[in-house]
Length: 492
Image 1: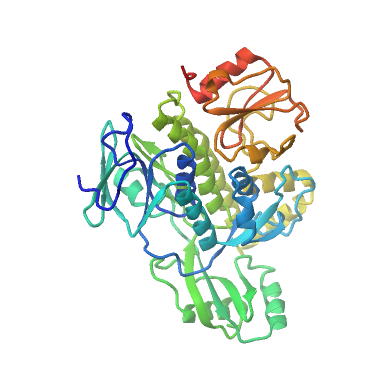
Image 2: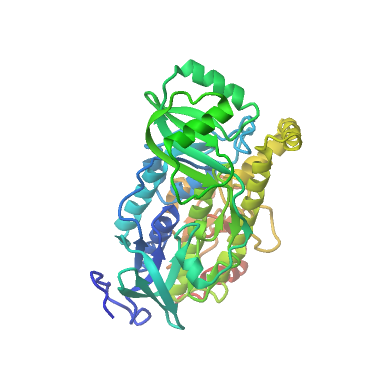
């Protein structure tokens, strides 16, 4: 087999005959995050990104609370904060102007607006620094899998072999299509134009007109992003060809139709369009090929959940796939990726469907929007919807137990500082407030921190690498059973 420029690291018996352990198609936020998570466990990773250059447009995306927590767990948050703008975590659901709920259960109770190319660059740099290999201009053209691995063919005919392939290659995923996994759902019914351009009227006039239009048109805005440069979002007329970029005249036409003026827009920096298609992959795994991010689910961008959902897929999958490759994964561990993450995606698809209905200008949806606006004055309603958007309300089904079981843990105070600072290596962690428990022969996979003063109201917790609580208690024998459940048979 011709592996071209690739020089694999020395193979163990487990990986002999494979150029890499995992090939990831796509180096967006999901693919780059997954590559880094795998490298924390010394998994040999190749990331194939079909694009040769970074995106030319600077779309601002939102990192929600749960994603900020995960970045803090890996020591990445400070780098991201340098490039973003923080704002309160309020008004997230269908852009209904509700304040952030009081006392949100997170040390990172904000939304971080940040340019998507910056997120991609920082995550890719992190993965490369950990040893991942990234090849730009490497498009997947085909693959074949067998009982031992996957042979991937690139567009130029080159073939590379790995034990697993993960498609993180977006909503039009080549990997998903070649795998034959169904992608049922609804096609786009509405389209929205988005871009950045200069304007030709005073800011006060823009602000007044935008405020008037947004009383009924919630998919519309003009927001300053620099001197005389505005981010422009305006509903399009129907659903067109998303593969064709809109023109400046398209923007002018739609601005006049919606706002009665084109605001004198000119000199665009970039122009794009997006639809409201909603689809979910029928399965996330077929043999040695898996899907994550937009390759597994697409939905309207309302609420800003898309990038976050994909990154959180990667944090869930990374340590499980690494365990499979390292040979210590319990039999069903890798299957929990789909079991846990697909229901989360189903919920996101449902809440974005609901939000899109609330953006409608029809009388019925507008009446529902007014009613929901009233209900969100109740803290419990506002909190529940905020937790949906920010993914802080997720509880995986780990069986019966206290409410904290299966939920994420916050960045609680510990003797060494903050809990997330102890999780940079991507390992499991036992936080022991009794001083009596041990991880024993699982010490190669799970860290132990003894801190009687840790800010918890339970005696001990066992955490997975993604920060979800896998066990609560104070009995060593019970703990050992849960260590085996999540971290396999103990080392000899």
